Length: 399
Image (cartoon, rainbow, N blue to C red):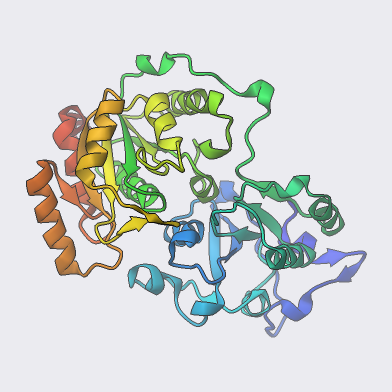
C-alpha cells in the first residue's frame, strides 16, 4: 500500500530527509492525499533536457492536464527557473522548473507523494544516471511512477530499495497477466454510441492532447463524452479507461482495446467515445494504429498533423506523409471516414497556422483547426457536423 507523506517522513523513530523540506517557522506537514475528498497526490515530474520537446511528451501532458496528481514542479536543468506553462503554451501556470531533485525538494512544502519519470525515450529504458536519480527519489520517501517498457518492480535493486523505504513503484505499462488478456470478440459492433479515433501522421504529435481537449469541450456542451486512452501518459494522467497497447502482446491488442471500450460504454453510458491514437498507420516502426482501427472499429477519425515536420521524429531518413496520403491509407484500411484535421503548431506562427487551416480545408474538403490555439468549439462543431444526433442530445441536455 502507498504510504502517505507524513508516514514516510518517519523511519525507525527518526525524522529523515528534513534538510530537503522547505523550512518555515514550523516543520512542514504533508497534506495527506485523498482523491475521494478532492485532495490529489502531489508529484514532481522528471524530464531532464526534454521538457517541451518530443521525448518529454509524458511531462508535457501532465503539465497540461492531470486528474490524478497535483504537479508541483518539473525537473529539467536546461529550462530551470522558467514556468512550465509558459514553456509549453506561453501561458504561466505556476508550475516551476528546477535544476535537479535537491532544488525541487528545497522549494517543496513537504516530501511529494510521487516522483514521475516524465519522458518516453526510444529505448524505453532508464540510463545508468537515471537509475541513480530514481533510487535517490525512493530513498527520500517518494513513490515512483514509471511509464517505461522497463518494469522496475522486476529489478531486484529497485525492489529492495522500495521495501527499505516503504514506498511502491507503479509500472504503468505492465499489462495484465497473460491468462487474463482478452481476445477480440466483435461485441463492440453492438455499441450504439459513435466512436471517434484521434489518429496522426506521426508519433508524439499531439493526438492525446487533442482528444483531451475535445472530450472536455463536448462535456461542457452537455454531450457525455468519454475518452479511452491507449498509452502510458493517459493512464498516468488519471484516465478511468485505458490500456498501454504497445506493451500488450499483439494477439491481444484488439481484444484488450475492445474490452476497455465496452467497459467505458457500460460504466458511463456515454453519448460518444473518443479513442486516443498512437503512432501513425503509415509509420513502419509503430503498428499500434492498426490495432486501434481494428479494435475500436471507429465510426470516424480525426487526424492530427504537424505541417512543419519534415521527417518522422527519431527517424531523420523517413519523410513525413501528407495528410491526404494518410487519410487515403486510413480509409482504405478500415471501414471509417476521416471527418477533420487538427494542426500541431510546432515551429509555426499564428499567421502560418491560419494559412495552413485555410489551405488544408480547400485541399481536403473537411474542417481543420488547432486544438490549442483555436476555440475548442471548432472541434465540437467538427464532430457535430458528422454526427447531428449528438447536437440533438446537446439541446436536450440544455433543456
